[in-house]
Length: 276
Image (cartoon, rainbow, N blue to C red):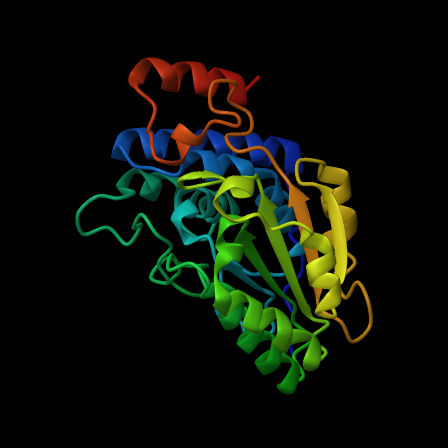
């Protein structure tokens, strides 16, 4: 079974993260769209995945032996599209059509976009789909890995906990879940809306191998994500502690940037900060 190789001239994750943060800021500003805070919190995770971990081929996005990535928090579509464009799945100029009428680059992730495995946005769907993918590629003997990125607020969904129970039962050690734990969801802090604590202990009690790290520590991200399977016969969850709006001072840890888009003036400031 053919497996893609990592690109020979891979960009450094730190520089890659700077570029995709800037793209997402411009996209959300131009479209007057939402969810820039949750885009910025996961930029470092995507930068490490797509420059150091995932075996995918932009020239053949559906290659059978590829690793799979599912963005379950599909409202953060701008950051995934920016990532895929930087990897060469399509031209950077196509990002200019984000959220425009008739564009495939919709505000929630669409599988019409090259490199996107599945449309997402209804929270609680991505993990069950990723579990099915992990079962399928293992049954086919393809040796591929499946990564699924969840939001913390999304962990309120019961469908996720059914999946969290199901995956260890089937010993899906080719599955890695990453939780973007920025601690702010759409209408308040996670602790206020529906407290998840003790979060890591819950995953362990369901039979998962658990890693808990700083989600902006590029070295730690590469170490943990590159170690899949983290434990024989167990799926892995990486609880990545992040900052909503990371990289832009006036957005960091601010609930309002779940929905706001930056003005012309604030865009200039934000771009300067993420490029510093």
